[in-house]
Image (cartoon, rainbow, N blue to C red; front, side, top):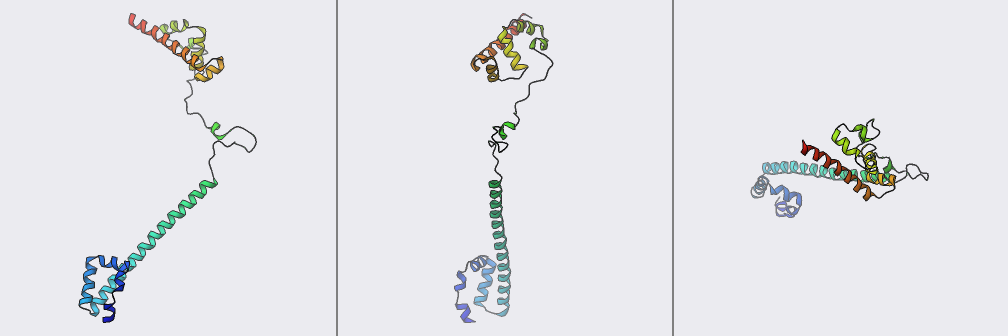
Length: 189
């Protein structure tokens, strides 16, 4: 009995250090070393067994969680490597140049649908109508293509065989003329 109490090498074990970190367990251990009897031994032994069982369960669960998360990451990485999403790859294995990217719909809103063939049929305001009829042929064409057909500046430039900058200037001048005519009319009223 005295031999086991004198051999305190087990106190350096991490599990024993954690057990004795609790003040109640520390006090119970001191009672066993100072007043060794069967009841104190059994109480200390029982408390240590409960503590040890909890520590083992905690270690088991934390290890399982860590291993499960590693396995999940491996599985997820494997799936991502197997099923790559390549938007620039051709749709078929043939020499087609159509890619997945080209099949994705453009998020740009569709132009409003109307039965008008040109803007003169759609304009209901008499002042705006007079201002529109005073525009030159190219200005009317640009406005019709942009607002009725829904073409972009680049598309209109390609269609008319002109530069994008020139089409942009024509568009701006047309809108400014319409705006100034309406502003003058509003000032007169």
